[in-house]
Length: 255
Ligand SMILES: [Cu+2]
Image 1 (cartoon, rainbow, N blue to C red):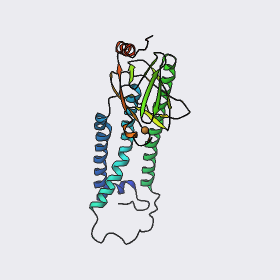
Image 2 (tube, rainbow, N blue to C red):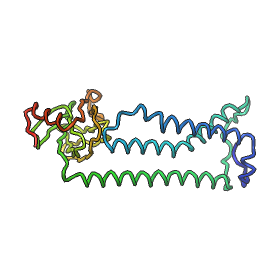
Image 3 (tube, helix red, strand yellow):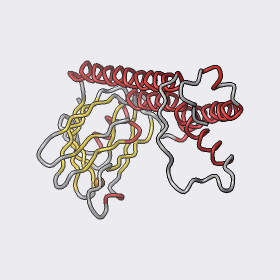
Image 4 (cartoon, protein in one colour):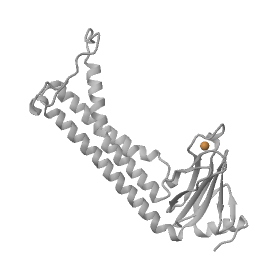
């Protein structure tokens, strides 16, 4: 299967073992693209913000980029596994194969290009999320989030409400000010695509804008003791009117 030193690309790809493994590689790549890039997103929680949508998109594109690498590695593994014969296995590792031929150049260039696309695309997404958060900051609604072993508390200073349910009005930029009352936690409102540390003496900021009505699952994403797995609550993205009614019912005041 390995290229002989200096072997030409045209000769390499004419070999029977290489043709079979390549065909297998293409099939596995296609399967990875379908399962990882399209089917898997059907199991993901509903995206209730553009942040969650862009995380989903990032995951799909990263899966596509890594699919050819996965396809090649799995194809070579399967091909060699099913074509081994009794007595094939040498008692010890052979000498290292050193080649500097076109095949090595081909896979180095292709995998470098794939990595480069991943880095550039990742940076573009990161930059656009930061830019959006900055633009939204002046008119953001503030929610102070406190992690305690093992519950989440939310305080809305402008509305003067303290609660254990995360209620947010739709299309309203929100700024979470996250802190912990004891050990380290991680604030994770899943459907909003936000995950930020909750530390004891340092407020962590996180922004998002919910743009779809629905239920939010709030979890803790950092091991914080015995009942860490149960440190969860719920919430919802509601209409502005429903949010105001909820605030009034909590004894708070609406703007
Ligand atoms: Cu935890």
